[in-house]
Image (cartoon, rainbow, N blue to C red; front, side, top):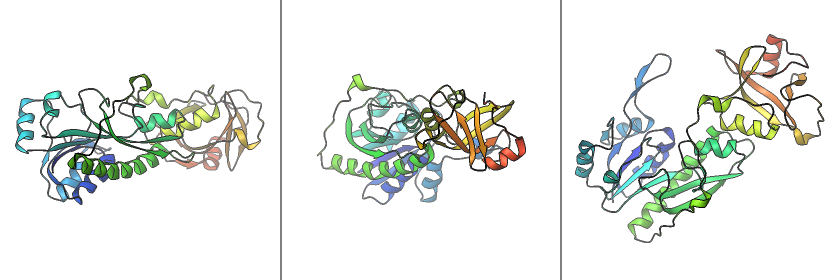
Length: 312
């Protein structure tokens, strides 16, 4: 079958790789325009563009996808299926009607849970033990189409948004091929999502990462893992901005602290133990503003932290 692939981020790359080694034909790849990135503001293409260009696929980068010009171009590719994975734009009904068979999307949640731009982040932040990939028929609403296939995956206590993105992207690739094969055989069903069970996963803004020490150690630990990388879970100590990268909820370890939320109750080479609204958290890795990530012992030595200091 002829497939036009829409994707932009690294998450979409394994799906494109899987299609490249499948029996299906990719007649074009649509991705977002090149943008300036990094401190040097060098112009870079998306990860999907980089792969597509390497293997000689035709790449299209319209600034706006829902236009008559884009529709004309896409019709010329004669697609049977649109495959959309982490593309970054909602397609109009007119664009979605172009394929002769269907438009499908691989979404990184167990829909109808966590519709939106950041499903992996929010699944971890909310303390979910499972997430997964859902292949849906795309409609004009955000992640609201009928379900074709769905598969769950465990979220481990050690997982961050970065590790889960890697694992889920591989699951998405395998599930996507299964879905396309069933579509080709006309052996698939469309199951409507239960609107009563919908939850949202909006784009992660910087302030989401601001730690509220009144919350439990478990909730804060989930926030750290769910905001890993961007925006990073952050706090302040004596006016110093601090991102927390490595931490552990030690509430169940038998430690019995008496500090108030945000108070340092123990300082050692192993880490900084902080009281929370419920339980204690040990911080093992951190990054002061403008500096590199460092172990707790190194940060302690340079900032002379003491028991009784308060994280703001």
